Length: 167
Image: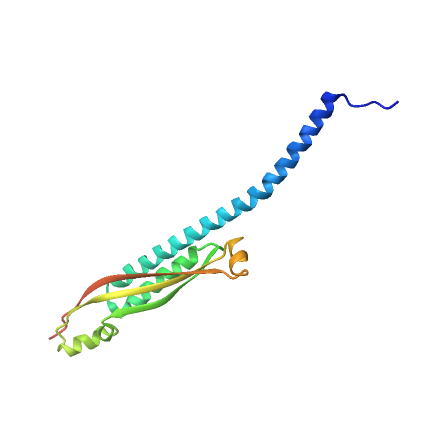
């Protein structure tokens, strides 16, 4: 004998099926939206980390002897690469500009030009950095899988007193 479902049981089974279909349709929209929001958060954090690294490198380069400024900036960039995650990588020091550039490359030449009496050297140091960011979804849509590249530039003033070594 065939037993038919009562109208009450039929409605609850139908309503469960409808809820499952609605859940699947909602997840099809919700999951990509959450992934894109996560990617955008990674991009924003990456840009902020690049700006902060550039600022720290420019600040480190502007303090101390101008002859060793590049090594101090490179040390900050190396530390950022060491601490970077798989999504934030390849911090590079693109440009390192002294203004005025002729005197600052060799403080011994400045001492010699003043008869060994030293003197004050002042100007600005500009540091430009680049970072590659590899989020999950966004590069696939916009750049075909290539990492997104962002640049930052910071300029700091410096003043350095070349020691007096005259005898």
